[in-house]
Amino acid sequence: MTVPPRVLTVAGSDSGGGAGIQADLKTVLALGAHGMSVITAVTAQNSLGVQGVWELPAEAVRAQFRSVVDDIGVQAVKTGMLASAELVETVAGLLAGVDAPVVVDPVGISKHGDALLAASALDAVRGTLLPRATVATPNLDEVAWLTGVRVRSEDDMRRAAEAVLAYGPRWVLIKGGHLGAGAAAVDLLTDGTAEHWLRAPRHDNRHTHGTGCTLASAIAAGLAGGADVPSAVAAAKEYVTGAIAAGFPLGGGIGPVRHGWRWGA
Image (cartoon, rainbow, N blue to C red; front, side):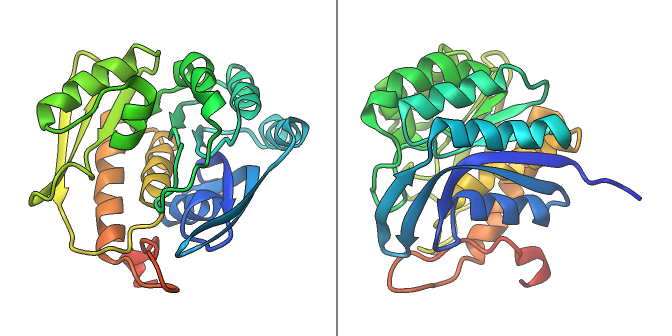
């Protein structure tokens, strides 16, 4: 019996099902891997925004992580919403003992503008979490939060990448989806030496909730399956582009991307 690649997501729960742990597990399954989870926070969340956040104790996060890693093992880890400096430091410490690639999505704010990470956690993300990352995947708002670099052009994306790499990740993917309204959605993947520019059609669809979680989880699934970083990122970009094109309305606000788009699900 073939055992699928194992991916562990460490993130918050989205009760609306479009982002967070729910999006991560859907993505991993869609890409042929086995998803496992460490829940860091519970949110009351829907298409209109985040109505409440309840952070889990560090002890509960640590216990979930050890339970999975010590028995089942992992071939890639993805981190998302970590809520507080204490949880960032807890997770970074746990990752130090894992011999598997780590994708860090430095989630600071939701699609609706709601804070998902305490302002006091910035130093912990820079100093303890990013150095553990095989790939960090900040969007342009997260780049500004982490580094102070404001990206207004593709040339700025190079400066942004250099600034993020200074905190220690091996690779950084600067996501340019919010860069203007051009015909293409442009991302830059680099390790400071090699540069990979990824371009995809920009779809006129407002239902994009969960895009960042989905992309990071797709990269982790590729890495767990043995792909190198550029190959895993390129495949993830293609997958999330299709998911955005097929995004659908739920509730009265921003609907989710469609994780099962390849099967019409």
